[in-house]
Length: 159
Image 1: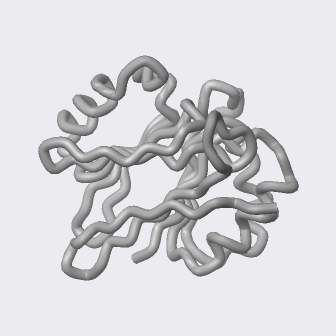
Image 2: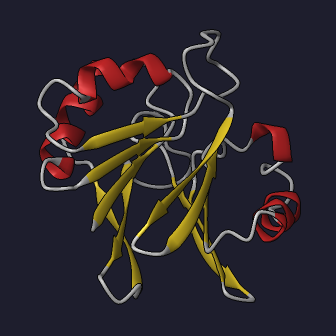
């Protein structure tokens, strides 16, 4: 099962449209907030299932602030990250993931890609496709096979 993870799109249609080509083969898309209404643009040509959470720049109550999804036996906790102070440290979000018995913790907010693993918990931030900090525009991908093996990769959104 291929999961595309996008965050911090910030209504920049140019990069959202470029990202659509990269995510088209994914089974699931998770948007981690900050202009989560951009999901409407992403879902137009996307054939898979879409999940989303609201970020600190989202004022709609259409999406929750955090959620949990299970894929091929792996529990995924996803949130924007602002409520856990991820710009300062990933400790709070890591412990929240442990509390929820999550295998994978997804968050955005920092606009910087990250992949860490601690005590069997994978933490991943895809960065931002529109306003990256010191990095390239990116999308994260999680592949969870039928045996529950997890692999993480990143793809650059190029003009």
